[in-house]
Length: 244
Image: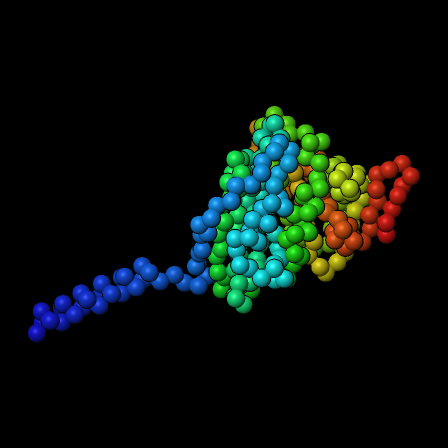
């Protein structure tokens, strides 16, 4: 009898182990898409819109629910990107997911989705930030001796950018238009595109936020949304063009 109970106990343990091995909690469920698109790669021309189009083609997310683009990328000293990490939130079949793309220097894109056990707050649609990034004239940017890093940052607090931040710009018709001053006093979440040289001064690490070393960062405010959300904008032209 004792042997029977022992065997039954072993069977239960084995079943439990196999169940645990096969069970994935909802917050960690992952989908890795088999099709790996290869995107066009050119110097000074990161494939931002192509990444979005590839994800639209491969991932059955609900476009109208897409929000909150998260993007990190690195450039080499010659102006070619070394990798791009892009992600955003969007529903699939009424459930909340985060969708990601990792793009290598040769243009190979690896796509995945992860189901969430919570619903992210409503932020802007990803395509707006990608369109602004696509308008940046990367061939006019200095990449330093070791390249540069680019990140999209989100802000939920009021703040002002003035001459402390030496390199602040709006994107207009494929050019960077210098700003002298821009301030935000809004309840909406807004974002900046921030670019840093990878060769930090005095041997220190590269800053990961503009406040760590403001003069070294290039800060871009994507139009039309972010410029429209600003409380006050003063352009750097000699005529003192201002939008209040």
